[in-house]
Amino acid sequence: MSIFSQSWAVIVMNIRSLPRRLWMSLAMVLASAVVVAVLLAFLAMAKGFEVTLQSAGAKDVAFFLRTGSAAELNSSVTRDQVNLIAEAPGIARSGNSPIVSPELYVIVDGIKKSSLTEANIPLRGLDPQGVELRQNFTLVAGRMFAPGTDELIVGEGILREFNGFDLGSEVRFGKYKWKVVGVFSTGGNVFESELWADAKVIQSLYNRGSTYQSVRAKLTPDADLEAIKAYLENDPRITQEVQTEEAYFAAQGKSLSYMAIFGRVISSVMAFGALAGALNTMYTSVADRAKEIATLRAIGFSHFSAFVGTMAEALVLALIGGIVGALSAFALFDGMNASTLGGSFTQVVFSFEMSPELVLQGVYLSLIIGFVSGFFPAWRAASVPVAVAFQGGR
Amino acid sequence: MTHENLFILKNLSKRFVKGKETISIFDGLDMTIPKGDFLAIMGPSGSGKTTLLNLLGGVDQPTGGEVIFDGERVDSLSESQLTKWRANNIGFIFQFYNLMPMLNAERNVELPLLLTNLSSKERMQRVHTALKLVGLEDRAKHMPSEMSGGQLQRVAIARAVVSDPKLLLCDEPTGDLDRQTADEILQMLQLLNRDFGKTIVMVTHDPAAARYASRTLHLDKGQFVEKEQLMEKSA
Image (cartoon, rainbow over all chains, first blue to last red; front, side):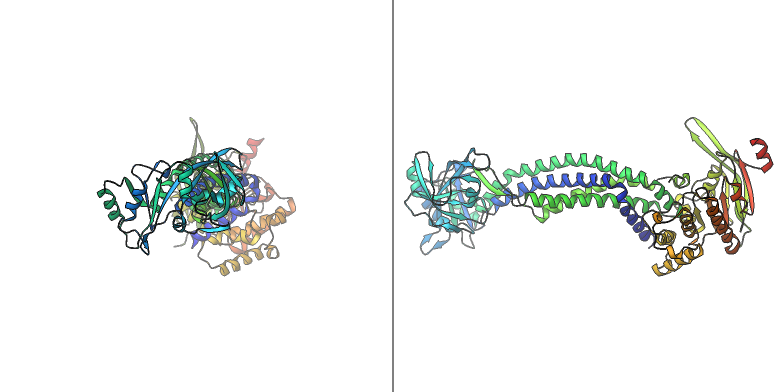
């Protein structure tokens, strides 16, 4: 009881004395806030990219690429191979037809709104069955492209980040002209960074013959991926390997994980800088309160209460900074659009994603700053000589 | 077992090491403070007054000798034991009051009681009794910045007596006050000594203040001397 009440009393006194050290205290809050905001900006960027890719992948969709191809761009699948894949065990059927989507993936140029520079955009060739395999697909404006025509539909991400793809406009890639007839959403995932058109038209315009680059296939609920792998390995005509679409995009999403690592390194370096400032603030605080601490110690307050009081002050200041930093990062970055190069050398449009877990990471970082910057000054506070109280001075 | 003497200092020595030099403040000091005494200690700067007060208050420890308080040796207590001993036995009154500027009078006086197991209600009852004793019950909610020097010292006295310690140690308690206010404070200390039986040790430079004490000891170069001797030296 006594230890608690005396520690609490010291904490209250320290907090109430903060206005005497207003600017030093604000500097510590600001340092902590900046470090947390920078960390969260990087983490939100990495998280946003990861979510954009990972949310595109379905567990119940098998994804086939040529063996050794890490992405669709350098993969190929012949028409015959598509037919063989469609007969693999565990592929769902609609009536008598297997639900498979052979797709093409070619790169076209677009002008980024932010920099007015050219950047790669994926133009995907698929058929209506391929569209149905996409989770959360909705046509938000216009209509679906008509098979066999030079019509395309454009993802919302492309519309946001690139010039010239408005509904009804005509776009030219090389010598071919296309007409934008619809705008689609897939719930914010990576497919929104694509243009979609009829697969056969793309085969024809880009001289692909009857080849595709990837195959998606709907799996039955009891499908066994190992059985499909065995089926592919046992047929020498098939040169593709399989994974779930979810696994494919999870691996792609990791490609920006360096951003999170970079963010952590940068914020750690900054945290050291903030620590230096915070230590200075807390040592100043202890010096400012030396007579008060000594008086309390003379009265009979314990070393521990002096230690706890200073630690609490450091933690409170750093935590306020952490919360300010997290709120600022949330206000500035959450939902902010950006685009970067994805795994297939095309632009992936994504939004910064600020999750409660990230905010918690920021708060933890601020508490670490508070703890380290408070510990040594608190130790000094606990060892202020009591005789200081007798040395006078106002 | 009761003891007539509250403090007995036997062959007390205190030395400080400063660089390669050892400075001796006391060397073989003997002293007795009976219970109920109101002792003034005077002496020139550097005579060891404050060091003596620190030793009596348990905020410093002697290099040698014995410090016996109410029959028990306290010179060998650990730091944490001394902290508890101070909380139970000593009330401090400082020259510059040493009140917590962010707490009102009531909360300042309550501080020593936070070290006890008293309930909040019991603590407040005692606080108001102490404030009433020093004539400041109506100022309980005032902040230190809203009070005069005399009022601040009275709050400090209330804080010193609220936990009913056996000994009050006063370090120049009127050093920051005008004559009239100083007299009021000294009369209050006299009252605490006479009517409440508090043993008081007061360090002062002021002969007028010392006259309120029941006896005065003069300290010079770590030794108690007769007043005449001190005057001769000064002359």
